[in-house]
Amino acid sequence: MGLAVDVVKRSGRRKTEMFDTDKLSHSIHSACLSVRTPEGQAESAASHVTGLVTLWITQKPAVTSNDLRRQVAYHLHRYHPDAAYYYLHQRSIL
Amino acid sequence: MTPVDTTISLSVVLLAGLIHASFQLSISVLTLMSGHALGRKTAHHRLMDLIGGYLLGATVMVVLLLAFIAYLFGALFPGQIPSIVWVVSCSAAIGVGVSIWLFYYRSQLGTVLWIPREFARHLDSRAKSTKSSAESFSLGLTSILSEILFVFAPIVLAALVLIRLTPDMQLLGILLYAVVSLLPLYIIGILISGGHKISHIQRWRERNKRFLQFAAGSGLLMLGIYVYVEHVVVVSMLGGL
Image (cartoon, each protein chain N blue to C red):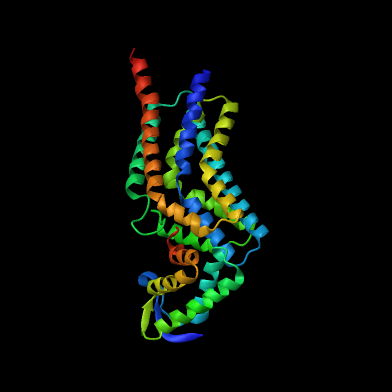
């Protein structure tokens, strides 16, 4: 589901896009699975964190993808610190 | 060539392999590829196939690079290797060593390396979309080639030392270099296959990145200086006597 909030992509080179809760939930779910979280726990963490981030983002006209990433990692840390670390750092591995 | 000379030459190859082992690009790509595969709910045996393909690709490329460069030097200099070649190779090793001290990691969080960003983006997108062992084999080949700026110096020095050995010792030297230089990659592959979390591995790498950077740079400096003294300074002194 898309919300009327623009997400400004990293380094501004790519086009901005609408905030998409499904995309966000999928990325959190994948990060959880990447650190070998059981499927059910990954789904639960993705659903909770997506809800919290959606609440945060609706107050804003636009956010950067880096802000979004930090916000997700902040909330995810409560549910799964390893997944939060991986989510925050997967773009800085290479 | 005496047994002592052979032992010294193989020790130089071993040190060059250890320096190569401290370079991080292929480990980063393996970590990324495994992370994406796990995130897609890839079955364990498929993950093992991907890791196996990747390790095989990296091994083949290291062996091919070293054998090719050694063959090239052997064909170009069938007799004795001219001093100028030793001087240039040792200077390159020292230069790369200093560069590694200064530039190896970018000044940001994580383990982002000073490689062209286009290369990094390509490797990132390939690591993300690798789904078969053939693709991971190709990714293994590419990842070694992508860090050629750094691995060139130890490979060239190892090749120069190897071509002075007997054929059976050359083969042993190539195998020794390949195994030692890829040992960290095999260990990470085994850890991931054994169920270790990518986040733990990445945390360890991030905590120790400055040490690995220092070790790689210092190792190259020492190797360059040692080979220079042994093959340029000592030879020119003996020639003058």
